[in-house]
Length: 324
Image 1 (cartoon, rainbow, N blue to C red):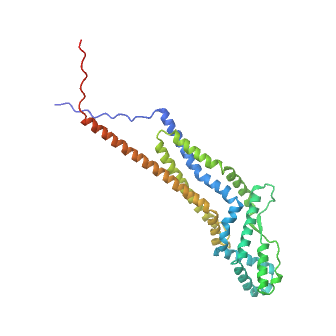
Image 2: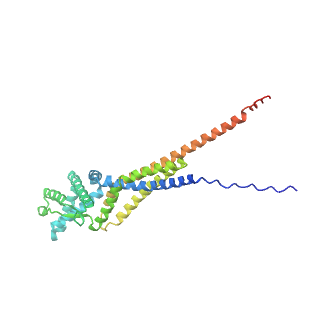
Image 3: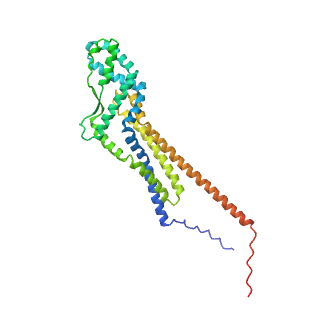
């Protein structure tokens, strides 16, 4: 009876040498850190170079003067302030339609667009002063509605509305940032302003270093691209969640449609940056994967060609022996 065949022995998996494992671990850490810093760098750059620039802020907010939600919100706020200052008493119900119509018609003129731009510039200057200067007077950040009230008074007077001349043009300050939020916003602004340049630079340096250290660099490039794409997607989700939370925290009487329009306008650049990170990361990962796939096919074709040549090549004659 023939002896039973011994089962084939399984060779233990080959372990990479210690230096290679250290390089892979270091590469993974560098790539993970770069992917984490990518959306943070985009957020810091947006806050420092987008929101903090008065010219860009005014340019971003200028088209909203033609938005119907913004017009209605401004007309409501200015109309309430004019009626409060007018103090018509029992005759309020008589004059209120005239005031409301005048304010609404005013928001559809070029004069309103100019006043809207001037008001946004004043608001931005006031907020920046409160965020950058520690010596600023404690309290809320306010904006003066006197220029808008003066324009409305002129419009009502030209339309011969009764009691229009009695509207007092006072410096009415409206809080745009509550006093209890100024300190927190100041700290957050300082952090983002300080990190606006270092974070994007560190992201690039860490990504390049992670790929350079890796043993399998093409795989490291693919993973880096996917990680950056994931960071861009998470940043887009964070912007959407921030919009929901911002509108949810508004008071009951606050104009939510107008606030949503303003939020969308301010975060448009940030949303664009998030989609660019997503597209760039996916493009890098796809290009790296396709390059590796093409290289593997080329290597397999070369191996098959060499085997065919070896099979068809004539046997080489043995060299003659030397005679003694």
